[in-house]
Length: 103
Image (cartoon, rainbow, N blue to C red; front, side, top):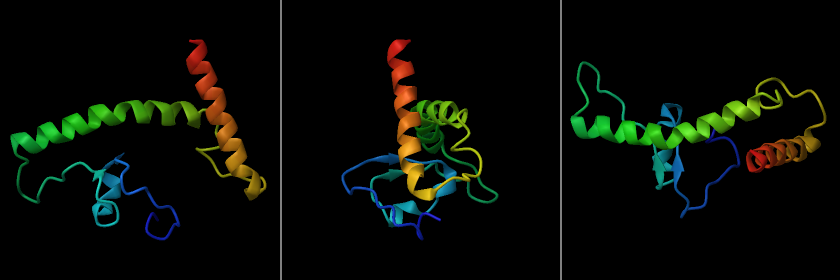
C-alpha cells in the first residue's frame, strides 16, 4: 500500500515502523523496522536489544494512535466527502494536542 501511494518521506527524516513495513528501507534509508527472526533460528542478543529499544521508542506513537482512534474517523470507514477528510483529521489532531496541553 505504501509503494502504490504517493506518500514520500523526506530523505533526512527518520521514521520508526512496525514489522508491517518490512522492506521500506529500499525506499527510505532512514527507516527503522524490527528485525525478524530467521526461520528455525534465533535472534542474537544485540538484535533483541535493538527490537526492544525500537519498541520503547514507538510506544508513545501507538498511544497517540489509540487516542485518535477514539474519534472513530481513523478506525472505521469514512463515509463523508473525501476532500474534507484532511481537514477533519487535522481538527481531531488539534483537539488532541489541546487536551494534551490542558492536562
